[in-house]
Image 1: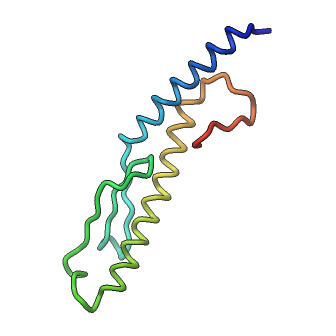
Image 2 (image 1 turned 90 degrees about the horizontal axis):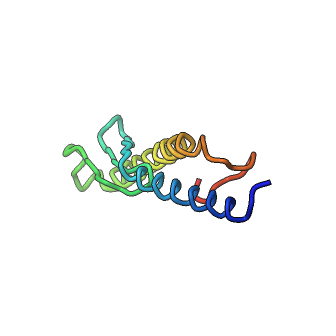
Image 3 (image 1 turned 90 degrees about the vertical axis):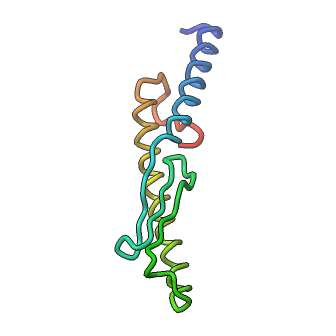
Amino acid sequence: MPSLDELMQAAQNVQAQMQKAQEQLDHIEVEGMSGAGLVKVRATARGRLVGVTIDPSLLTTDSKEMLEDLVAAAFNDAKTKADVAGSAEMNKLTAGMPLPPGFKLPGL
C-alpha cells in the first residue's frame, strides 16, 4: 500500500499534468460554420473565441436577424467542436495517469 507521501506526490504530479493539459487546449483551434460557410467562428479547444468572419453579402440591413442567427449557429458549432477536441486532447494526456476507474477530473 502506498504511503501518504507517495499519494501526495502522485496527486501533485496529476495536478501539474492537468495544468499543462489545460494550457495546451489554448493552442488547439477549431472552426465552426453556418450558412454554408458564410459565417465562420474560430475558437480554442478551451472554448475561447478567437475570431469571426462574415461574408460581405450578409452585411445588409435586410439580413440583420438572419446574420445574428448565423453568428449564433456558427458559435455553437465551434463550441461543440471545441468540446470534442478538448475532451480528446485531455483523454490523450490523462491516459497514463494513475487514476481510479471511473474517476472524472474536474473540467473534463
